Image 1: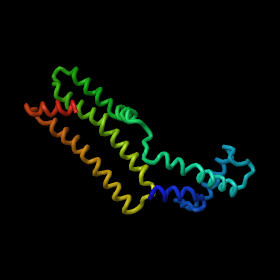
Image 2 (image 1 turned 30 degrees about the vertical axis):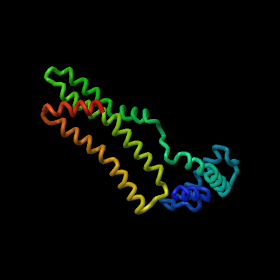
Image 3 (image 1 turned 90 degrees about the horizontal axis):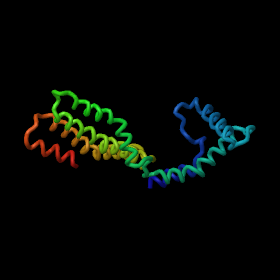
Image 4 (image 1 turned 120 degrees about the horizontal axis):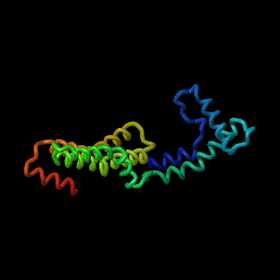
Length: 191
């Protein structure tokens, strides 16, 4: 239903009905649209502002409903690309872990603990958060008020178990190691 509302709004779009955050900037926006359409040769150089705005409205009505429909519920990147973004964000921490092994007084435990946490963030948590944010943004563009608040709450609740798991790992693995903990680390590294 919300997709239909959004599509209908795009099919009947007119720039003159749009809200302007600063009403004094409306003329500047119109001038910029006119300049852009002249520069891209969508209108003739001598076209008046009204003609430029009409062409802009026509472009939005013709192209945007299709673009909106094809991008809704789709991700911009493949999972591997999200992982690469995670690697760029957390890969330095993994390199730091390896450098710890050079220290003769350092045991394998801090290396294992930090490696598990960094790899978890890099391969799961960070990509999952990016994908969740993108999905949330793409599927409720027309929602406002209570619906939007409920949707944001749902997304937070979906994310919390993953966050709790990482906090649990950080807390459990930072304690002195006991025999049972070796199984926990092995399970986390394997899973």
